[in-house]
Amino acid sequence: MLLLSRKEEWLGNIRGDLLAGIVVALALIPEAIAFSIIAGVDPKVGLYASFCIAVVISFVGGRAGMISAATGAMALLMVTLVKEHGLEYLMAATILTGVLQIIAGYLKLGIFMSFVSRTVIVGFVNALAILIFMAQLPELTNVTWHVYALTAAGLAIIYLFPYLPKIGTLIPSPLVTIIVLTLVVVSMGIDVRTVGDMGEMPDTLPVFLWPDVPLNFETLAIIFPYSAALAAVGLLESFMTATIVDDMTDTDSDKNREAKGQGIANIASGSIGGMAGCAMIGQSVINVKSGGRGRLSTFTAGVLLLIMVVFMSDLIAQIPMAALVAVMIMVSISTFNWASIKGLKTLPFSTNLVMLTTTAVVVATHNLALGVFSGVLLASLFFANKISHFMYWEKELDENSQTRIYKFVGQVFFNSADRFADAFDYKEEVKKVVIDVRRAHFWDITAVYALDKSVIKLRKLGKEVEVIGKNEASKTIIDRFGVYDKPEEIEKVMGGH
Image (tube, rainbow, N blue to C red; front, top):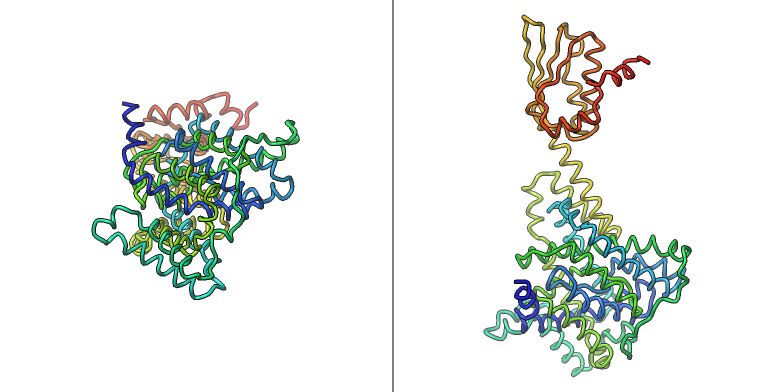
């Protein structure tokens, strides 16, 4: 069964994966160079990293058809390290990043994706779509009209080519766009910015390079903060991208295996002079939209990237940036969740606020982790507030025995604990108070404290108090942390010695 699954992942979509891999490889080149420039390193650092990570992750990753390489989110975190300590320390930090990600995989931290709501994912996706589009703007400012014409022509080919009979479904339209626009620019001698203008291509294959840094605690103290941040952002972006590709392809992925795979890929990257990377939502969308589904597409993208930049650099250098800009604009349009705009009118205010906050924070800071954290925090607060309203109570009075009965229903936790304590009429003239919690559930220490406070206050006022109906889970936490039914603890609380 496992062998069949592996065969399907590698050979189940050969033509589609090979063609998609070509498109992705072409789109990876300018991005890898751009991310190298952001990080302050030579272009070959990003290109070698993208080749290595894509190839390694195709074997060890947990999500078939997802593209991993050098990314902008990771590059931004490296700037200070490279500036203050140099490339060797970046390589060491990349290897440590991989080790931390492997540890995260074994600790099964992929489960934390369950805390990321659909609303946060939509906000994250929209932010990435906006950032992808914004990243193309430098290529569209202070340029000649030729660039706008080529970009418009590229978009026309991308969206219209699939409608051609037979051939339209055989070849990915982004690949057709790159080929056609390159031929037009070369044949007509149009003077526009090309891939060759982005930076010098490497002319040799990568070799094993162990970082030349002292192996001591001082080095660890320098690289660990960067590695921890890179590991966290890398895993977060990879998990989120895997979830998006899961939705696009209606398949599942193993997030913990993905964490280990990302770790192995980053260790390999750091060992050949590359920078740390992670899953790329833009390239993954290109891959899926171009027909890529299996591991062969990721492998093909990585291998072709290296072949093209080392052995076909003169040819690749002639690709106009306008062609790749058109492809990336298509990616941003495809990535953006347009239904979320309609949802602003129909969805609850809290849902929209979480989505917009996630989007705004990511776009404003270019920090994916900070944006997702903000969204998760806000969603959690709204959820806690909503659940707290599901707690209510009823009161009954047995006049014969002078007993007041409080019947609680719902969830008692930190956000509803004060309402629980305020439910009691402490000044009421009754002999006994019965607190019936058969239909309530106590979740945390704050809830237990509210129960303790209420019972002890009632007893201080001379009333007999009985708590009945605790379910097993509530009984466990109350018995462990509660004090109202422990005489020695009561004595301390009520002023005894």
